Length: 227
Image 1 (tube, one colour):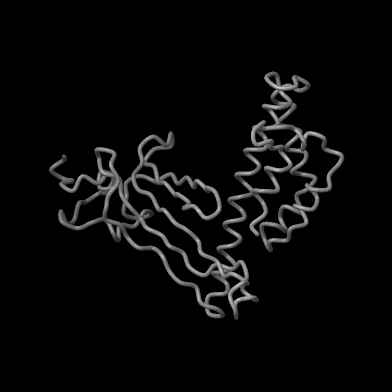
Image 2 (cartoon, rainbow, N blue to C red):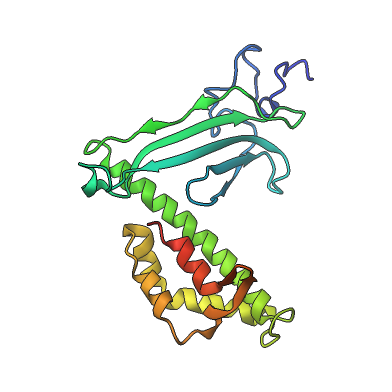
């Protein structure tokens, strides 16, 4: 353990000055307090499970510096008096933890959670929903392009080169851009209807998992449907 970093937190390896040997990095500013720019990666998992935001010290994303784990709890129309807020954020449970130089994660954490109250926090409630749907959309695009390459490319049906298979996805996203934008901005679910009723793009029925049987169409609908 470095003499200048007695607590062993990796994040302190990137500070200009180590101010207090006993101070946990609770208030260390990622933008102004570090000698490097941290690289952030968000891993959206299944609904109801925590989302992980991991900050790396390097562009190759090999050394983890800290992470935020958070879970979103939403208003439920089944609860009396909450019908008009159905689906809006109610509470964010979030904890910021730091990696030590030995690779272990701290047991200490900074609580970043909060409750959202209507109507005072309505804009924050809306913004959170936009951010979440934007992450879903970006993750969906990347995964579907990979699925198209796997099912249409040389290792699949072998009807397309990898670049041609990728272009199929790029063209589809361009065609449905307005519907995807409306989904992200307002949770307009027209895009789900479009995918469900599409009979032109036969690749939507390409199988990506034989057991349980899952097609690209089913995958997309499941990812986009937040109900």
